[in-house]
Image (cartoon, rainbow, N blue to C red; front, side):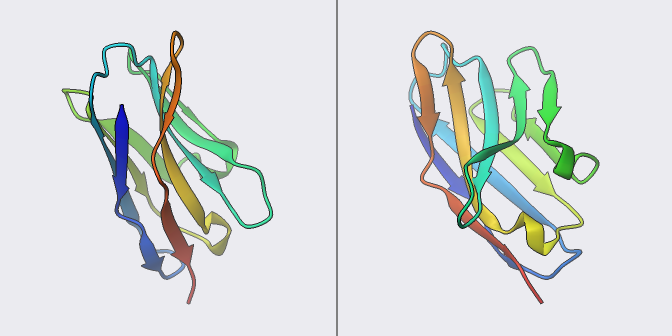
Length: 115
């Protein structure tokens, strides 16, 4: 599975961005799709995930501001980010997780929130 993210960029505080992650290859074994982020000097952390059945998980700092969703074919996953703050500045990585075969990662997309 190859993952390609898009949609990052520079946005002012309070603004919005929508990240996309499109998968190519076989996704039949994928159980969970998610977004992680890594800020400078910090560990990579889960932002949001969506399971095959559709249940979602959000990190506390983004609850109520970010929304994860996917296309009906489950090849593409999105992260709608609203009310962005400078603390959201990070490289955002798409992750497709297979319990049987492990993790697949995208190359990352930079999100910078600054005035």
